[in-house]
Image (cartoon, rainbow, N blue to C red; front, top):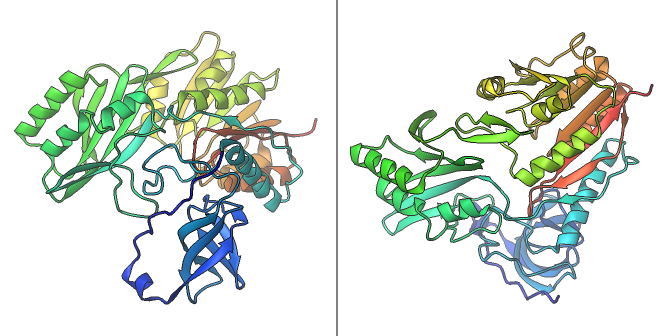
Length: 445
């Protein structure tokens, strides 16, 4: 497929940036950076070019002087990369939700696989096999946070531009699940509601999750709704029929309509979501991660620790295998939801609230388990990894959405006597620079 000539809209620049001398140069992009930006060299400087791809010959505007690394503005693609394709979304380039729609799918998954390998290499683990990427298709994302702003001209609802406070007014979205698009799209029922609730000059957010029992929707508002606003919210709930509708004012959340519990199922067991709960972005991604964990279980395991367990996404499937599972997470509401959920026959689950970054589990608790599953946030699990390296069981199964912190924590475990096995990449973040990964680390017998 021949790529179309691309002349992106120049990004808005600050007054300081406008005052800095600039020059227009023509360079060849040779790599993608960790955030998906093109990288090129010019007169001894590394130029960071959002929107550019390896193999592109581009014309760009860069600062006339400054640091060794400089951020440039792409003006035109003179000769496109063979991996450049037309982006499927009309919002591409101005919306910050997807940054790599213009990269061919095979090239994108190859780059994500290589990114994991590079991160491992930086920690001396470059010999670790990285398996094929399991790609989750777009149009399956079940949760999203969007911004809204009300002006005298009307209401805008969508994602922010990359590194910007500017809001891109979405008319549709190729990333989100159909139920979310129907709610927030151009003809969706949410826009007139927000336009009626908000006054010009105000802004807020929309947090929505598609659950098995319907939408779980929170409106982030600048002020409590008045009587008329509450009547509008009630009428909206009656028409749209979400599982739950709430409003958040500052940090205070309150329900407006709770028509039925917003639930998801793990291993067939229903779990009711607390307000604003974390959930894996897509059911397909969740299923792929769960399968990769279960495939790595030791055949003789009977006792498991699930650390950073959230709602029990992996705890309940582990219990369905007949294991006794101790789930630990710093989110008390999530632990309470898991504790209230039914458990598959033959397994057991206990839930404990504990900040594992500040207070990691140590011996003898760690040594009492046959396997530990650890799925930390992007910052990783340095403290817990150090404790596992010192006193962990024979098998640790690590899940991560950040190659850099995954490699750092894996290095700690390897230094503690573990061997890192094949890493499985799972791309449940289509068109972005993010990638999920699962791997087992085992102590030699």
